[in-house]
Image 1 (tube, rainbow, N blue to C red):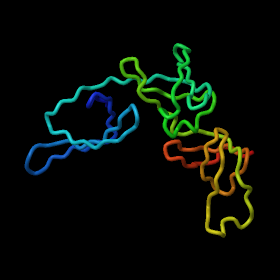
Image 2 (cartoon, helix red, strand yellow):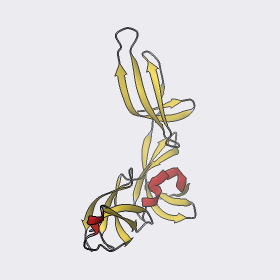
Image 3 (tube, rainbow, N blue to C red):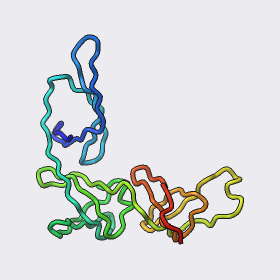
Image 4 (cartoon, rainbow, N blue to C red):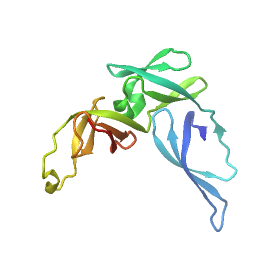
Length: 179
């Protein structure tokens, strides 16, 4: 659910209904501002009203990167829009051509973008694995992906391998295919 609060649109991330032994019930919430991703913890008393915001999702396709902007194409109208890369947050580093992402739209104005949670990308640079690497205590090495992002991967991953990455936590999940 999304709602208007202090002139901005916030989405409920978590909530907990609390009914103490004495006094009125209340709801403890964790809210996320859709415009910039800021997190807020707020408590609402029972009977307190909020104005709901009607958020619709619209699909866009990543076309290309231009300086500090990304160019997205609306999949319904084929109109191209220039969006500051900072608006997409950390997920912008995982975008590759023709990747689809969704925008949260309120009153026909995009207020936030969501990069897919999981992406499959090719490893473009990484150190080769040597026998005995795991003896030194480390179990991962840095790998640069085709989009320029860097993640920690296990030693058996090599250049040309396709890996699955969680864009929310910047972590390697699994190898999809081997070179």
